[in-house]
Length: 462
Image (cartoon, rainbow, N blue to C red):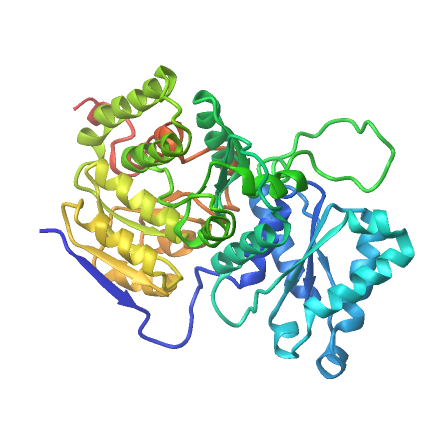
């Protein structure tokens, strides 16, 4: 009989963490704005680690500025660094949006970032002229690193952007806002694909698909600096208050949607992420609820192809296999539901956050499972490893940080989510929507073939 066992980490120390600090999530959110620049108000390491992490996963450079706080700032404050940093960025890069992101350093010393930004704006008017200076929007984003995780930082980043930039509503733009969460460029393109098939225009808050996966083309201008193609424009964020509704795909990313609902009466729907049949059906129902758009045959065909793939593969090769899933809470819960749809058992699902939304969704998933589900919250990879040593699984699904103990325990690892740095191209392959779910079931099944079936193939014919 299925049941859900919720467990927290039973020690203070964190060993092989599943999460990083808040500013990373805010940087991810600001990076999805066209001509948007994250400015980290902290030490150089606060930006360098994230740039390194982004580059390993996306294989793309990312522009992240830092105010470079040193020991003297701990005594005298970071006022000078932030104001001069904003001035340098504005004059040299002429961005449309600067996201001023706090860190543990600037929060602990008590820097008044909003006050400093007001002074910086006045100085910009004197340097650049009032009209040009006002075209650069500076958004303070509070992300104290000593609490919460990068998921909360992403949520705070999106919430700060819509709260500071969305304009008072005028007329309906007949669009739907999508807050995608920390997903890959391929996932955002798949969401756009489904909306295009339904004839719905969307505003992605914010769209990292092109900034983190840009086509390399000859330059058509000698003007510097270079900004990547794509991203959500400032005008689109300002226009988000005129939309028919907002869908946050991940449970941890709902604050921006709720703010638009509260301030501008734009109705909100939060989660679940559209992985698998049921969750993707729910996403399309939300689109239909906001727009009355019909589900076209082309999408029904895509759904049919997913069902066909499940019928071809699930009962033969996947049914009854025990799986460990870890990483992003929304993606982990979405994959857990999908493996239940495949007849597999999500034996243990582990995430680094203590999210009530995640626990609630996983308890719902556990009711759909044929076996008990251990739910590890606020946990780390060491706890997951110990749990698997005590009660082995046949497959692991998660990001690259689990590769070493997967190898030690001789359990195949299906790589999904963020970060994946020991394989290439995965950020382009969607796992959301019906098409993405087909990709995911193929990836899972091929991993099962490689590990559990004879390499001469005769057993595959059974």
